Amino acid sequence: MRESRVLDAAVLQSTEPVLLRGLVRHWPLVQAAQQSDAAFCAELRRYGADTRVGLWRGGPDIDGRFFYNADHTGFNFHREVARFGQLLDELLAGSADALYLGSTELDGSFPGLRQAHPLEVGAPDPLVSLWLGNRTRVATHFDLPDNVACVVAGRRRFTLFPPDQVANLYIGRLDLTPAGQPISLVDLAAPDLDRYPRYAEALRHAQVVELDPGDAVFIPSQWWHGVESLAAINGLVNFWWRQSPAYMDTPLNTLMMALLSLRDLPPAQRDAWRVLFNHYIFDADASTAAHIPAAARGVLAPLDDNAARQLRAALLQRLNR
Image 1: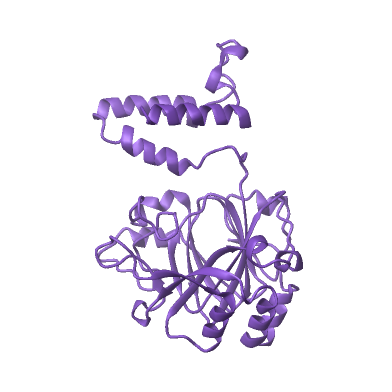
Image 2: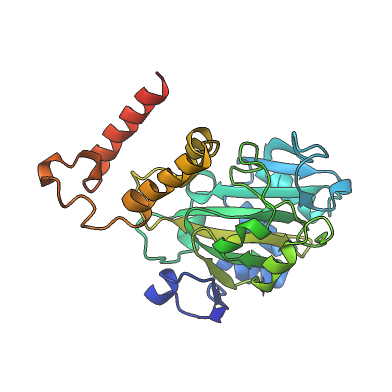
C-alpha cells in the first residue's frame, strides 16, 4: 500500500488502496478527539443530539463482532432507533453492549457537520456519512462506490483484500446480509484456518493498515475490507462516489439474475453464454456493433439516462411475464 498526503487524481484513480496519513487532522472533530472522548462527543452533540438515528446493538456475548446467528437465518444483533445524544451518553458511560451507528448521511441527519469537515474527492456530489461506535468488528465486505474513509476518533484497523481473492474469503449468503453487501464468514480477529483453510492464501494478499484520528484510506471499488474498531469510542466520516453514470444499475442485480438464469444450465450451454458475455460485455469495444447502422443499434448503442430508463422498463416487463 502506498502512502500519500494529497488527494489528487492519482489517488482517486488508483486501483489499489492508498494510505493518507494526516489528511484531515485539521478537522474540528479530529481536534476535539485529540483532547478527549468527552470533547469529541460534545463536538458531535452540537450537530443534532435529538436526531433519531438507526443503530445496531449486540450483547456483550458477541464480543463486538456483528455477524449471523448460529444457523445463519438471522443475525446476532438487533436494530433500533434512538436519540443520537443517547448513543453518545452510552458510549461515554462505557456500555458493555456492542454499539454501532453505520453509514448515517450527514446532510440528512447532522446539518452543518459536512460543511465544517470538507474534503474534495473529485466527484460533484459524494455521499458523506458518519460511523460511530465502541470496540466493534465489521465483517469483510466490498462496496460498489469508491471510498475515502477518514478516522475522526479512536483507532481503526482495516484489512483489505483485492477483488480476485473472493474464493478464499468464504463469502456467506447473497440474499441475507447485515447491511446489503455479502460478507466473509471468517472472523478477522481470530480466523479459523481449520474450517476456512483457503483464507491463509487471502491473508498473503492482504493489506493491513491502522489509522489514528486525522488519517484516511482510499479504498477502490470492490476491494474487500474488514474493519476493527480498537478504542472505547471510534468515529469515522467517509465519502462514497461512483466513477460510472448515475443511471447504471448495481451489478449485484445482474449477479442475482445470473443465478436465476445461468448457473444451473448444462455445462455446454453455460460455456456458450460465457462467450456471449465476453463478446457483449467484458470484451466489448467500438467494433462490437460497428456492423449495425448507428441508428439501429438499440441496446448495443451507448447508454444514456433515457436509454437506461427504457431498458429497465423492458426488463421489468420481461420479469413480470
